[in-house]
Length: 293
Ligand code: HH2
Image 1 (spheres, rainbow, N blue to C red):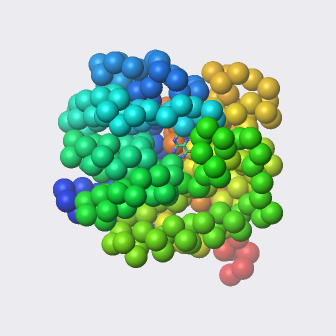
Image 2 (image 1 turned 120 degrees about the vertical axis):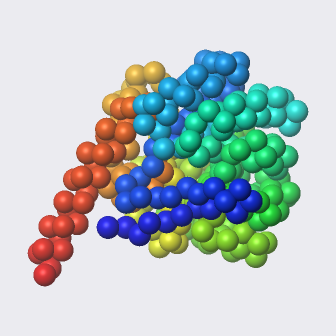
């Protein structure tokens, strides 16, 4: 059984506890242009209703985002991102007991969301986008997701290149963890994410999922977001809305290789997938131990 890990936010003494099974993070996109659900939950009421539905379906935490990071997406200015995200974070954090994450690379948006009740910042730039972000994380004690991306959303899928994708992302994590800790962030605040689809070809995404367990070495929870992504479409040739089964297969494999947080759109279905995958993974460990006893 894995150790119970805890992500803390000191300022409000709010905790995200990791039991011995992965957490399901439900995606709430308050954007007009997200690749799979853009425009569905643009007004506050619709976004809050969606968040409540995801919690009812079994989400352990919610990730609220107001800027799409799909390949080629335009950036959103800070005022617009705040206008979209903060009323939703405020209402959702009041309405639900599960921890709320803000998906942003902007320090001011992160700070406003933390003030409004979020406890985790999901920064797809891993503290490289806004120089003020690391200070917000260090001062508030919020959790921080450090995600790997080669390039920027605008350019990342043009010509991704790696000699050794797992080795290069491990070096990236090592450098980013050092950077964060040197500026006052505690190791227990950090979540790592290999950034499936962010500057990666199909072969890179598959290798990262197949070898996810190699990142366990850092001792931080691993977040994996495969939900409905383009690499699944490459494998099964289906449009975004029909990739639930493909997502399920990737989620099950990620669970088996030690994912700690599964960021998904289809919470109810992926919770079932996770539970079955966990049960089988545990059985594998039990029988391996028995063989070696
Ligand atoms: N993927 C997306 C957005 N945020 N955050 C992390 N940590 N890891 C990911 O892989 C990740 C992420 C893309 O998915 P989605 O939110 O559905 O789309 P969009 O960025 O178009 O809003």
